[in-house]
Image 1 (cartoon, helix red, strand yellow):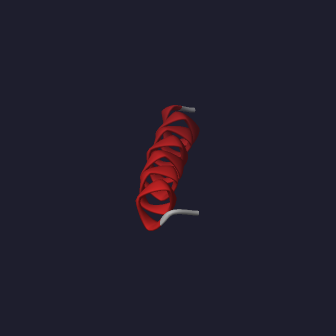
Image 2 (image 1 turned 30 degrees about the horizontal axis):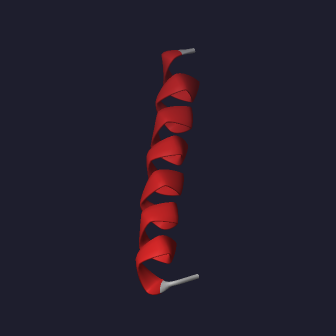
Length: 27
């Protein structure tokens, strides 16, 4: 159960990083 929560947290972090990177690139 706690494992799936960790995966969700990781996904959210990755999405935040992606959004930050894309914003920096001008997309």
